[in-house]
Image (tube, rainbow, N blue to C red; front, side, top):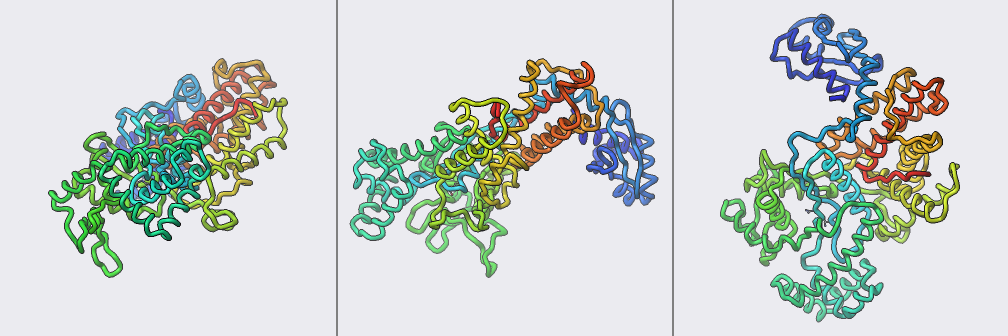
Amino acid sequence: MSDPQLVLAARVQAALSAAFGPSYADADPVIRPSSFADLQANVALPLAKKLGRKPRDVAEEIVANLDTAGVVSDVQVSGPGFINLTLSDDWIAGEAQRALADARLGVPAVEKPRKVVVEYSSPNVAKEMHVGHLRTTIVGDAVSRVLAFLGHEVVRDNHVGDWGTPFGMLIEHLLDLGEDAAARGDSSVRDLTAFYQAAREKFDGDATFADRSRARVVALQAGDAETLRLWNVLVEVSKQYFNDVYGRLGVTLTDDDIKGESFYNDLLAPTVAELEDKGIAVISEGALCAFPPGFTGREGEPLPVIIRKSDGGYNYSTTDLATIRYRVDTERVDRMIYVVGSTQALHFQMVFAVARMAGWLGDDVEAEHAQIGSVLGTDGKLLRTRAGRTVRLAELLDEAIERAGAVFDEIQHDEPFDDATRASIVRDVGMGAVKYADLSVARDSEYVFDLDRMISFHGKTGPYLQYAAARIRSIFRKGGLDPADATGPIVLGHPTERALALELLGFGAVVQQAADTAEPHRLASYVYAVADAYTSFYENCPVLKAPDEETKASRLALCAATLRTLVTGLDLLGVPTPERM
Ligand code: ARG
């Protein structure tokens, strides 16, 4: 255990138990950051109230029982009863040294790995991905990487919208264009927005086309082989497009991770039957509905989850219920994380409530909606093109790379780059910028998609962090050294060395938190804090020109530990770190 907060918490708890009895052994020691020391323990205040004593006296008694050996160099009671704790330099140095020597940077794998489904991206077939999907894709991928790093069994799940009534008109439109148009990669099919709109227009304006489309839906749902084959042509065109976007973004999703809505088609009827058998689904106004407790409309009337429409058709909610049932009964997962827009919050709350009524979710199986906020344009409104269309993802990514190129050419480089190297760095910078910007805000907040800010080499941006890592690599190159050989020993002299080492020790706790909460922005902020601490260190402590060999060895070790923390942290966020910049 090397996280300072956890180590100090354990020491304070031991002191509590020694001073006030074993029932206080798990009391929250209320460890907080401190402006007077490294950390402070504030437990004396609530405890004094409970014991009917003066907080300062309680604090003194805790301190009298505190084992400081090996960890704490100074302890002071201040103000009404805060306990200020200063960690010893030797302890910090030793823990940093241990992290450096460990392939996992001192972050242990969890003792009890869980099977976790992370459902993310989930675009719709025969429709363009929009920026909302960009965000669920980036956040979901980071969540998956973090959980996998901690040793959990991660099931990436791309719940693509590949089923339902629109496919009738889409298939008929494909037949009108000629199937070979898809095979040729003709733009009438490849341009998904245009394809979808053309089908829609015909459906609305041409009665025979609409009839054909409706008949086609029936054939699709009945499993007609020729219809399924045509449907598959559409699915394949879309998959190529999704994979193109995933490849450019460096997202870990593959075709094997796709379990679209169609996958659950055969499970809908048995799911509904089980809900009926359990008395959860009842007929209301012709439709089969469940009424989860606690969900009411404006007038206090109970709100239904419609499970089978009055025309006999199933819907989005039915599919989501069948999905949960499948994940619990067949995949036997422990936790499901739905990385989906916050606009669907009520849908998920109600679906989860029904699943709980059915006994599919409970204490041992968790489901959570990891809500994703909207992406806004610089005008503060939902991101649109100037013509008012939704922005196409591919164009957005092209633009990011183009701007990254312009900014990249303006900065000073140690060496000239050939075209291919430049292109590859610029791609990493552009994608890293977009991804980091997305991950650095709390996932449920809105954020403004502003390429100029994202691609800057200054401030809390992807390029700044990539550059910080590249700068450390360049120190090793200049010294003709390999970071792997920089093994210390770490000795802390200058305050910025101490601050940097202390920051590095927080990595494991942050990764754990990001995994528990499915909130990668915690890790994004941490990586930035590391780069910041490194910058102060670098400005104050010459490395290659250190005053003596011991100091040089220690500083090189700090550089190596920082580099690995940055690279590992950014990799968990899915942000690449080019070797040179
Ligand atoms: N395809 C849906 C959309 O684009 C998202 C699916 C979310 N996942 C789910 N299990 N309902 O809005």
